[in-house]
Amino acid sequence: MAAEENIIIIGKKPVIDYVLATIVLFNEGYDEVIIRGQGSNVSKAVDVYNALVHRLQDSVELVGVSIDSVERGRRLIPVIEIRVRRKIA
Amino acid sequence: MAAEENIIIIGKKPVIDYVLATIVLFNEGYDEVIIRGQGSNVSKAVDVYNALVHRLQDSVELVGVSIDSVERGRRLIPVIEIRVRRKIA
Image (cartoon, rainbow over all chains, first blue to last red; front, side, top):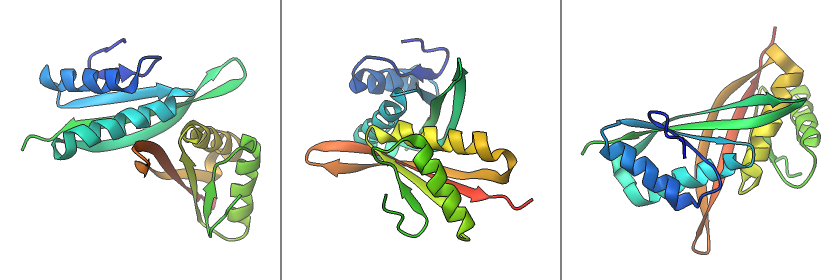
């Protein structure tokens, strides 16, 4: 799981692993974390977001969602970036 | 394909069918169309958006992306809504 700075790149691991990785980044002092999913992992990135909100309730908020595509050969691969912020009570 | 007003609900059809349906709604006079995908169709909804932008280039713009979940039994199903607007040149 490449956590370049504050980016969580969704791969083959279970959703909970990415939720935990996000919380670890918050605990390391990052106020914002980007959850990035590509291809079929776009849905999983939204799963991670929903599971994070389900657990952290009001102590996390959605900053924004951006969608885009990357070209691979002649195909457009969908990409999503979900930016979440820690809310300090 | 349930096109309640200006909502395109992504299902099992090919991406191009939903791109066409969006363009038809624009031609019917809707300025904004919502592309809605659930579960594994969240990625496909982003595919539809990317294919639409690829075809319509500057005559369509992204208004916003919202992500959420719906409960099914004890599971949280991811949902995305992508709102696009026709840009009149």
